[in-house]
Length: 216
Length: 294
Image 1 (cartoon, each protein chain N blue to C red):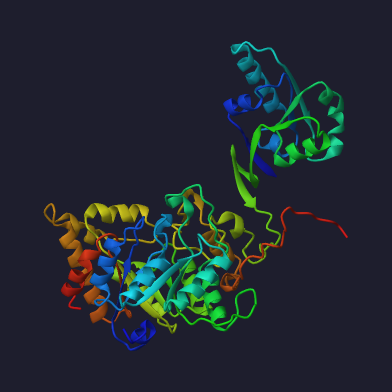
Image 2: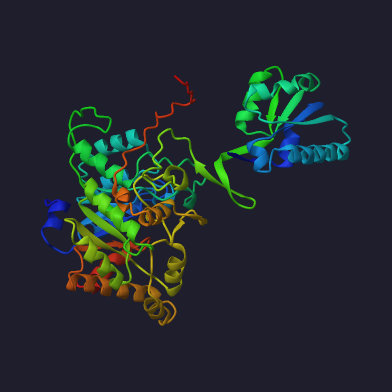
């Protein structure tokens, strides 16, 4: 899933300056699951914005709606009519959602209410962790299912750096050293010979930005 | 210096290297002074490459200064700040300026330094960098294109003998050897028992090992390193020894400890030499060597 966090309220308030009729649009997929952009968060943010408006003596129209998925146009048809009534959409989807809405409704400004962080998963309550960088060249078969491109802060492909510290990373003692984890899991699986395999420099053309994929 | 660093290491002599930290800025006075002070007392001088991710005068510039003043230079090259094109271009340039030794490093992470919002490049890492040097020696770049004039280097790398856990480090060490590293300078070692264990493993490979000696100046510094620098372990007895001296005598005790360790390593032929990192106290290196009887 895509993990994103809400921008600070002051930043959002600043972004909305000059707009009088705003649709706060949630996404029922990834950002709903990471508790930053679903139906519930749309309601809370719209209330906060109304309160801010009240304090500053404004009286703007703040509509609320959540679609199942912002990143697919077929789910956006249901907001056709609402879009005609507003002069800006504040999206609580990821960066893909913002762009999909903007492409679908190019005449109206679509503003990002979230900062998109990474592709990841929930690890424990209120904690999400990054797991994939979409590098286009998966080597998880060689690394015991642990991605060093993503989970090593330097993206090292050939083992840990000297900054590894009791199994933790030098940049953040909260984070595990990916290569220590890989070593331990390979050892458990009896596949340590994979640890000694040389990985050549990454091919950054595996996904030519901007990525495009066609099924043949 | 007619003899190359490789020749010196292969001669069986106990080898001493030290390092120069270039300035933050263009005032080279202190750097030149340190080079002049040390160039004839050690077999080669490393120049650090934006060490600890702190932007400084480049290692390449420092190595050229060493060459100009008749010393032997070891170019520290990290993968943090340059992609594979820039790394290769710098290596070509270094070669044309007479630099023949290169220490291939991944580089520290960006957030530990003084440009915390920068992009860490890490297009390659240490093992791949060693291989890249070896490929370029064969006459092509790593894109497979022919070089008009190849290079020849003596490539080295680093290892952390006191890392915890040690096993992944040993595997990486093996990978660096397989990639073509010929000499190793280690992270600081203080516990010679641990270091002997490491050497027992390392001896099976045909590479030269220089033990890292980092000068301790106080018990506080030792404790700080234990708590904050990965892969460094100062045993309690050394901390006690430093804590036991009167105020103002810490540096002197540190010099004594460093000299004692160097002498032990040499007398017991634990490894092939030492790499002395004085970190801002380069002035004191000749004294350490004198006390160590070198």
